[in-house]
Image (tube, rainbow, N blue to C red; front, side, top):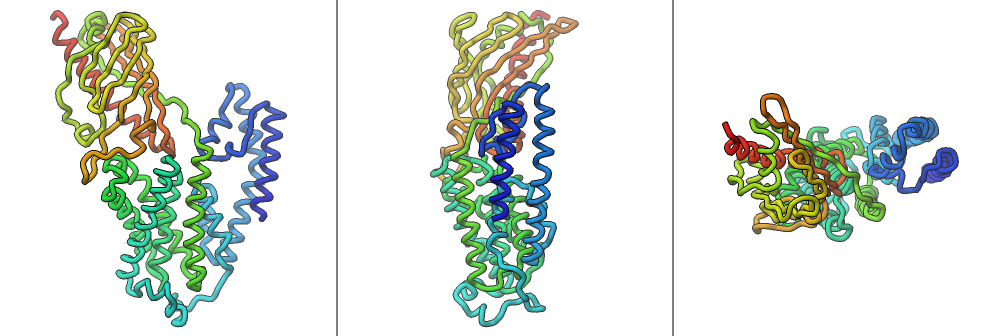
Amino acid sequence: MWGLLLFALKYVLDFLVATQVFGRPWHLTSYLPHEQMASLLGGGRATTRPFLGAMLILALPFVWCGVTLTVRRLRAANLPIWLAFLFFAPVINGLLFAILSIVPSLRHVAADGHRDVSDRSRALARLIPCRPAGSAACAIIATTLLGLVLAAWDIYAMRIYGLGLFVGLPFSLGMIAAVIHSYHGRRTAWGCFGVACASGMMLFVALLASGMEGAGCLIMAAPLCVPCAGLGGVVGYAMHGVASSEREVAVLIVALCLALPALMGAEAATHSETPLFAVRSAVEIDALPNEVWPRVIAFPALQPPTEFVFRAGVAFPTSATINGVGPGAVRECVFSTGAFIEPIEVWDAPNLLHFRVTHNPPPMREWSPYGITHPPHLSGFLVSRAGQFQLTPMTGGRTRLEGATWYQHNMRPSLYWKLWSDWLIHKIHLRVLSHIRALAENEAPS
């Protein structure tokens, strides 16, 4: 109740300061992680700093209240105080608030950390084996099945690849796995952490085996999802003894299972496009700009790739052709998954070729045991918007050739997936630029 009241008060104050003092829009969605930077940083530099300062000063009392309430609730539930740090973690903090709203206050737990025999005789206790190996296997199987259902909900019903899928889901499954593993008695922290990580990895195997996802996306998601699952396992270990009855354990698990789809739905309802990102790569060529230019606008077929990332399924360029001369000409860059259609906007031979992109092929061919699969993230989740080649003359008859791509991706957390997309686009750039360099140097007069 206090959390809801404080949030309502903060929204009113933020709205008044943003709209009446600084003339900026402010909405409920401005508190979502992917909206915060756009809401805070929109506008010129001259007005950004005062606005940021005012919003920070306004937020500090509410941060203090939120952390204080979280710490008091953790103490009442006999949970470790360090869990208050999760107050600042997007998505995870929402799950933490849901849990702290339902866990009971301090209960007595036996000195050996085990539950009453009468409690262990109930249905849930009979389903979960007492031995550590058995409870670990039960936890992994249960969370894998639950994860498949929740992942299908997010991917196919909500059609969004966001924080709920890559952060909230592994964290929740890791926590549930640790709670199940510790049901009959306290396990070690490393044991809960290992079971949680294993549940996340087993979910990856299940997604691959079911054909819902391919190997490429799962490999890229693993460095983010597995640590989140492990963190959930640590939180589950810390919560041992809080839910001291079968009913409380069931309520805790059900609360997580309901809170996560709700968060996914809210994320889908407030989803917005990410800003344009830019990737630039350059090589130096032993040829003059006018000798390099013909191979910039079009080039013959490249040799098959040797890089593992392309052999694993990421789309790679194979050739380029052009129809017409000057602005309005259409360049077609053929990739292994299809062709990019690139109408020319700036034709400044032999210095600059700038084009927009009107058609994008799939960014990769996902591998699965059933051959080529086509998960939803291959359609519209990584989109190239524009590109250019810039040629700069250098001393000694050399040319600096720079390739640039402006793109968007609709997967979150944006900064994490930007690391992958920037790296992949840079590899594509280098494949094209190296090919142009080889052609130009071979064809240029000695």
